[in-house]
Image 1 (cartoon, rainbow, N blue to C red):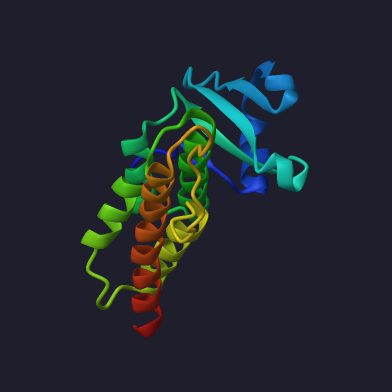
Image 2 (image 1 turned 90 degrees about the vertical axis):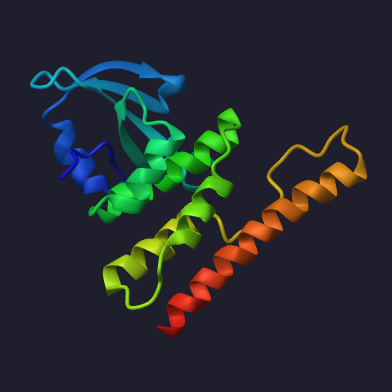
Length: 176
């Protein structure tokens, strides 16, 4: 079993931080870097959705941060629900703040999964992936200023298509 690279459960984060040493505070206190003296690994605790929840939701991520492909692999394979959620949140935040695209890659991987006869925990994983990574959202998250209408429409269609594929998966999971 692969060692964990992310946490999103606040009590697990709090317990794990007891073993780490605070190294520095970043981004006006929204992120904190820690060192695990036992392994030499650095970890970054950051707030997610802080604009909505006053910074109450945190993720803890091992540095160097996993790539988009690694995050997608984590969401598809981790046995830890909070790690799956943390990876989804990181994918979403990487898109929002660093313009790192993930939606097409992730929905393609989800479409490859045989949904027939999945155990309950695998169904729940897929539901969490779709909801926490916002694959089911039709909202155009790309910049629209200074774009021709056709470009804006193309972007909107991109999000709509992915959302429709995610909705199909969710409906198929409900019928099983």
